[in-house]
Amino acid sequence: MVSHLQNVANDRSLVALLEGVDVAVAGGGDELLANAAIQTSAVDPVAACTAAFNQPIVNTEVVLNTARGSNTTTSKGNRTAETNTGNTVTDAYLAAYDNYGPAAGLPARGPANPVVAVQNGGGIRDNAGPALPVGGVAPGEVTRKNTLDTLAFFTNLLTVVNDVTPTELEEILERSAASLPGAGGQFLQVGGMKVTYKASNTAQVFTSGAVTTPGNRVVSVELPDGTKIVDAGAVVPGAPSVRIVTNSFTAEGGNNFTTLANTPAADRVNVGSTYEAVWVEYLQSLAAGTPGGLPSRPTITAAQYPVAGEGRIVVTP
Figure (cartoon, rainbow, N blue to C red):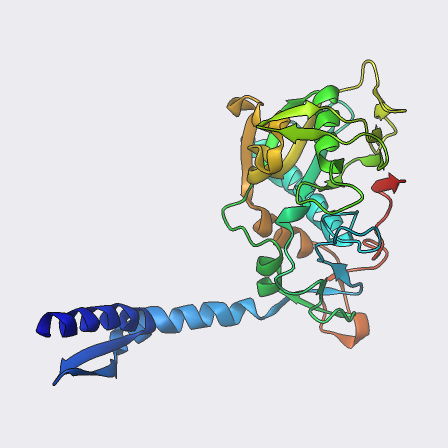
């Protein structure tokens, strides 16, 4: 009996330690007493930190689509179609390349060094709900808690994959389109390029760790300067290789991106910080405004990021 009571006390002591209290065992019962040292050194700082997460960091004049999307053609979300949330994330990746690339020995973006960005739809979560601001009404405010809820994988690092050939880029985008018109976590939001898919064409099939059917849903891939990587469903002869900025999960082959997984480790370079942190940096770099009488702070505008997207991804039947 004494041994059993001691085990109970030990278990409750562990829980109490995490909750900032002491446990005294007497007469077969227990009494919880506040532990001032733990309260001051651990509980209060954590409470202050989490309270700071609830402070607005950016305004938005437009509702940001953070929904997953579903296996219907009428439910558009980050796993099914272009979204303005996906566009802000991939633009953040390109901005981070500009900011952190030089320190990593990477050349500046330009015609001689095309850089594109991709973000897997499964890495954009709806933990805060299907839209930001929470509740889906704009103008409104976005907090750090909202961004952490949306890009929720705190070990996901921003990664540059070097020397991706046109054929490899097409293979990666075929993987993105494989679940269309339904939803798939591998569906890629894109930046620095325009992609057109034909959903009724043959999908890429992945079986037992390998691509068994290549797929032919990628109709065209075009860079902002008009350079075609893929045209009329075929890789353009002489098209340039690109660098891809993405998150480490995708860069290392998550969601069965075997083309990325098979790139030499030396061609994958971590830059900046986590995917969520560079998103926050980008949002806070936007010009300030006063939408709807809100306090002046960085603002996502409807002109920059229209709710229906801007045509970066076109899906035809």
